[in-house]
Figure 1 (cartoon, rainbow, N blue to C red):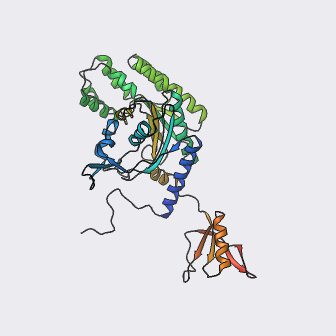
Figure 2 (cartoon, rainbow, N blue to C red):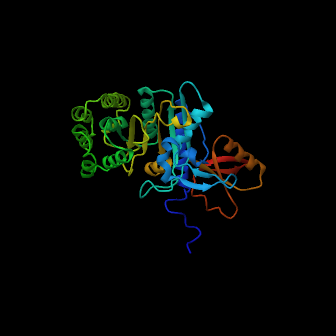
Figure 3 (cartoon, rainbow, N blue to C red):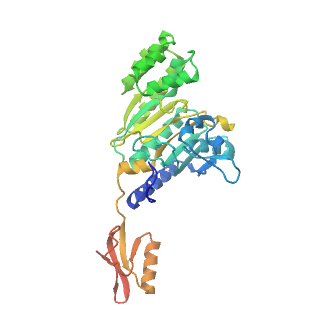
Length: 387
């Protein structure tokens, strides 16, 4: 029999130092989003399964915990991603004509971990822009993500840009069913040249050459010029390359500390994204710390197919990457039934100070707080003294 205190695999308690860091990051991101005009929404943790897995949410099926509602008998799902819920809110509850900027922050649950060291209970922050199809919204999402990382102490991040339209342009008109396209996307993601060659065999020569070219189309700015030479000259591909060049130039202008690269064969979220997509990497992180892009089809299943772009990240992973928050200076105070002392403590806490009352018999404790001052009694008055 296993010990009662053992947690399931890839599930962990968040202890005080890390919890403080996670909360600091949560406030940092929400405050930044608010200053940029984003409104906070709080979707429920669970919904009817068909709502969570409709449309683009179907790709989340294997990652979604499922349970039976004891009230209705229907199958419920614990959300594995918040974006489908926010799309539902935009489509049905807000139903605005113009632009809606929405952000959220809350736990999501994964039936399977995303990686060997990944948690199955990320704390997901996301920001999304609905209602504008121009590149201005894409750039806004990227800049918000980079500004947030900079504010959290992530130095010299690397952003990889790509576009789902490029693969669609290469495969346009090819006699392939959904399963075959999915296998090609998997081979591209794994950079598996041999498997890709076998899967591309039924395609015209131009399509085969384009897929093989995608395997090597990653790196710095010259990738776009090489792509124009080696990929089929199709309008969808040309438009995607033009958009990537536009975004890269402006990101480099406003965030010169960020290294901009391209990975035109990165198929992460292929079934989800409809246009430009981006991933931000940081030193010490095993995977991207932020992923985002354009997903214009996300609201279609809810009856409102309108432009959408955004990003999300896991604040727990970001907390582990950026280290602990600096200790907050605190005040040490004795515990006494002295109304003057208790009033002094209330006044200090009302001004935003942290006051740690040392309980009787524990005078040597309290090291978890950095107490740089203490309350002492001088001439019948309680005053602060530096420690």
